[in-house]
Length: 272
Image 1: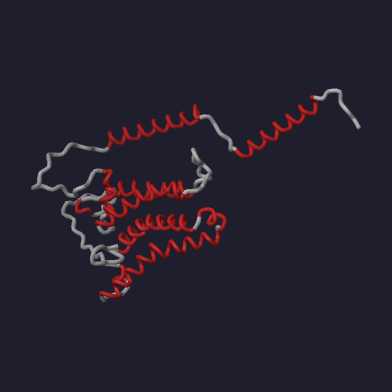
Image 2: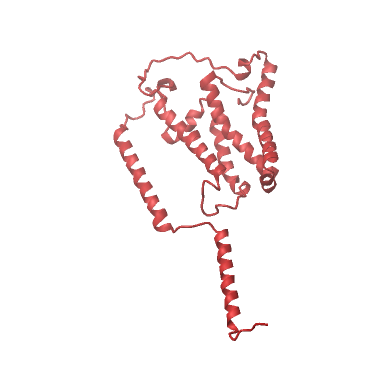
């Protein structure tokens, strides 16, 4: 049997091999990272400069004069809320006041509160990447930019006298009158009597808010079994319900603008 005069040589070899293995494992487990300074801070500084430039140019080009003191005998047309509430005011066009002013804003808060309990994705803790958070980031961007910022832009630049829609370049006629023929969806589909109309509207609303989430949950269960087993039925069903509640806003906006649909389901106490 071959021997060596240096007993420390095998230990050194083992230690170096072990260090290489540990280093290789760490490289496989941890993604590549960069320092906050200067990479992140530099981008944040450039982004703040761009935002300040846009806001400055915006404030110079768009006139915002001080108007006369409030006069109860002379109501401005249109009467607009502050810009940060124009999204809610625009929602009143498409939904019942109780839905637009109470239910939907409350569901936004509730949805944000349940996020820590339904989001079990361990990836991206402390940092966020599009590859690891496609659904979360995409849903947030759609909800904030499309369903909120777009409504504010629509209420600010496209709503004129009488709260009518005016496209860019059109004159805001103070005396414009449009004969609106908004009717409920069951009536548009041929239902004329009270009870058939009531049950048809209830079928559409319950099908949208309960049927679609159940179908979506079943689809994910069949197509993404591993994801379904990790998140569980309850969490997934809550996610799908909140998702379709969010999607009810663009659906209702489309029905109103395209088909003059007023409500889907009319009841004695609330309209959907």
